[in-house]
Amino acid sequence: MAEPAEITLQPIGVLHTPFRVTEGMPIQSARSNIPGSAEVFEPFSAGLEGIEEFSHLYLIYRLHRVDAPVSLMVTPFLDKREHGVFATRFPRRPNLLGISVVRLVSRDGNLLHFIGADMLDGTPLLDIKPYIPEFDVFDVEKSGWYERRAYR
Image (cartoon, helix red, strand yellow):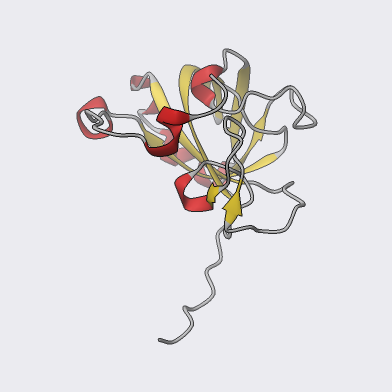
């Protein structure tokens, strides 16, 4: 099998949050009531048309300050046991991509104000997608190691 071609992603904006360091930062947006904002760069601002009609958004971003090496086996924050990185949301991932579902509070031009910050200030924003319950909510039969996690 041939190596895949290199992929280049261009940030569409930057995320602003109160977090300068990871200590004290929520581990998931669903566990955060912290405000933040997404500043969408001017060349992409037309793509925000109609976004204020949605209550929640997916923010897809680059984990730009992960300085530890990529690891395929990790111990997630809520467990004591090691698991494959793709069975976790641990940040030491091959492509350093993060995703958060946040509650949109308001739009001010190219600035989106939200609740649910769980990312560092200055994080490069790669994409935004609306959260649509009909597409994004599933009845879950199992949730792996998380059901048996060490920390609750």
